Image (tube, rainbow, N blue to C red; front, top):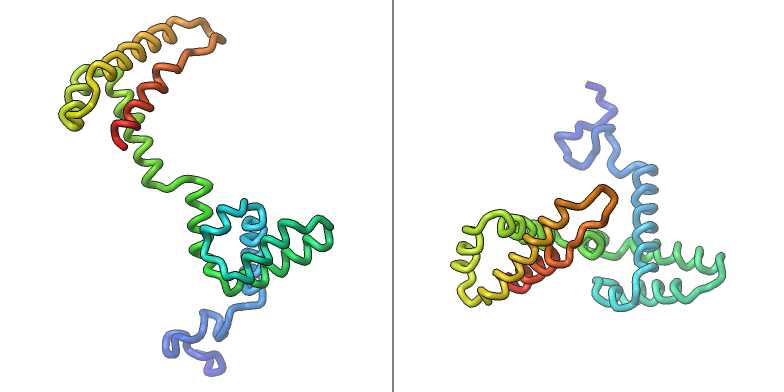
Amino acid sequence: MNSSIPDSTAEGEFDENGYDRPSKSQVKREMHALLDLGKQLIELPDDRLKQLPLAERLYEAIRLAQKTTSREGKRRQTHFVGKLMRDAPADEIRAQLDVWQNGSREETAAMHRLESLRDKLLSDDDALTELLNAHPGADVQALRATIRAARKEAQGNAALQQGQEPQRKQYRALFQALKALSA
C-alpha cells in the first residue's frame, strides 16, 4: 500500500480517495441543491412558509424575494436565500415539502384501503355485514341505498357504447360515505 495516501479505515476521517473533505464538485452540487430548495420556498404562499422551521432572517429573505419584481434583483435575492439555506434544516424542509406535494404515505394507504373496501362492497354482500360489525353506529339504510345506487350505476356504465362517458356520482358518494365513516 502506498504510504503517502492515508488508510481510510484506520482514521475514519478520509474518504476512499484519501481526502479529508468533500470534493469541490460535491460541495458545488450541495450548494445547487440548497439553491433549488430556496427557489421552491420562494414559490410557497406565506401560510406554508410559517409552518416550516425557518430562521427569521431566512424567512424575511424569502418574503423579500417574493416581492422583488426586477429580474436581476430577484436573481440576487434568490442566491442570497440559497446562501442562508446552508444553516437551515434542509432535510426537515424537504420532508415537509414532500408531504405537501405528494401527501403522506399514511394518507395514501388509507385512501387505497377505502377504495378497496368500496370495490368489495360493490361486489360482495357479505362485505357490508363486516363493515357494520366494525362500525356499529353506521347508518345502515343510507349505506345500503348508496351501495344499491352505485351498483345500478355500474350496471348502466357496463352497457355504455364506446366513447360514451360513464357516470361516477354514486361511486364517489360511496367513497365519501366510507371516508366519513372511518373519520
